[in-house]
Image (cartoon, rainbow, N blue to C red; front, side):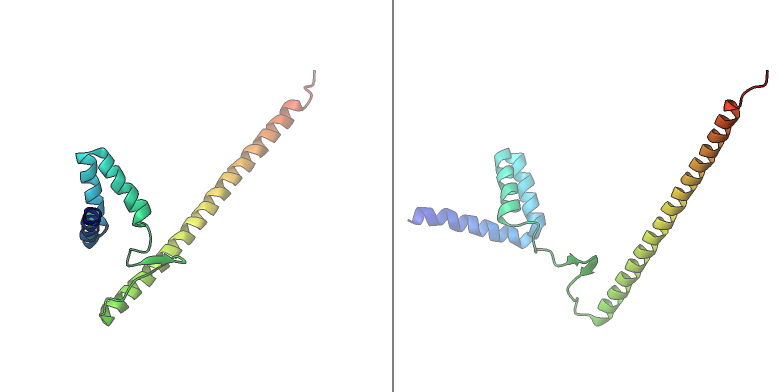
Length: 135
């Protein structure tokens, strides 16, 4: 029985040690695994994706409804500055999105006007060429 618990405790210790370094530690271990022997790297990659839920809630911040939610730093002046800066950046992003929408509308209108002008010219050319020529 001791032979089966020894490898498990070693694996758990290695997992805890890598968890201490976060995702960077796991990714570094995976790269070294690929360098040493590719199945080791592949196994670590599979474990990181499916076993450790790498893309889960491990980050300190998450995106909810288009806004960033982050933990407080403990410094109220910095948190107020950060909130103000994020609000300003969101306002600038919204203003830029509105600018791009207006730019697309202007481009669409210019293209439509050019099409209509070409269409008018073509119709007038067709009308002039379809008139019977006096003999």
